[in-house]
Image 1 (cartoon, helix red, strand yellow):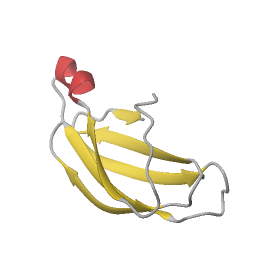
Image 2 (cartoon, helix red, strand yellow):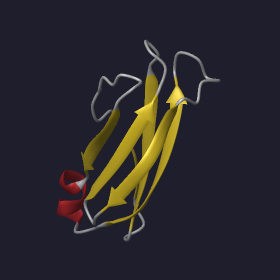
Image 3 (cartoon, one colour):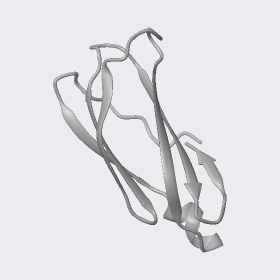
Image 4 (tube, one colour):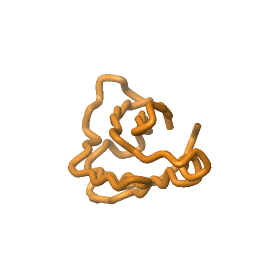
Length: 90
């Protein structure tokens, strides 16, 4: 599922909130763990976009990203695992 598209300049440090409650609430489940993979779509060798911090509650995940290369596009993939054993890739 594609959550959203964001624009970020390489010199910026920005945080992004990902809200999982629309998916979790109907099934009465909560987040347990989230794996983050950052891929540069423009140049697969580029690793300049960095995850510098993260926070997780039972329904929300917040990431702070810095760096990146000007004009390059990146994909940030989140694989969420729940206490109930569900997986979601966003």
